[in-house]
Length: 112
Length: 113
Image (cartoon, rainbow over all chains, first blue to last red; front, side):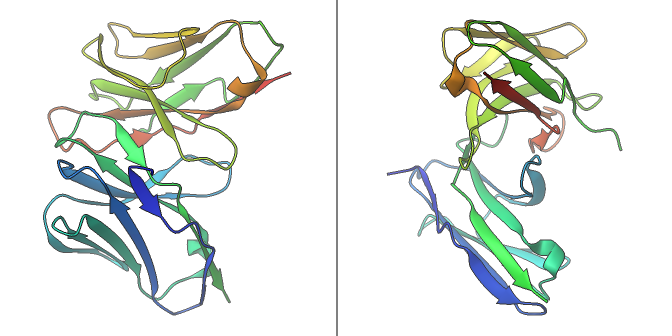
């Protein structure tokens, strides 16, 4: 079992819809959680970071963290075709300066 | 804003050859991380450095070595290359004086023939 689990998808949504991406992790000591977007052949690009339980909003993106359930999610509102990419959930054991453990990523397809 | 710089961007080597990948972190970032991403896989942590000292080690083969220099740039040295080493190699950097968020460079695509 991987330390960080994601549904590989693809998750298909129409333009303008809300895309919901989910991630679970196994290490209860994890402190830092990140969502990265990765286009094919490109490097991971940071979308959101979240450290405490609850919601964190940034523009069209909302990250949700529930440490009791070991669950992290990312909501993308008003999805655009340019959002089509692989979204990687990454977990860090400490508050930082330690390795990121990635999930296998969820491929999102936004159709015009 | 300045980003992480990696060189070369593409590299083609033969089996059993050596390769050196370079990483220049974001200015004032003092921690460097190396990740390997195989085709269709998620990035896997190899090794990290803080203030020129190795801070963590992951699934890095013994054939690979790395170091961080006084100007904080880092080099990943890969010897006796194997076909399975073909992958994207990413360097990321972070700062201990701010949020520990890791920012990734554009990567080096290594192809071993």
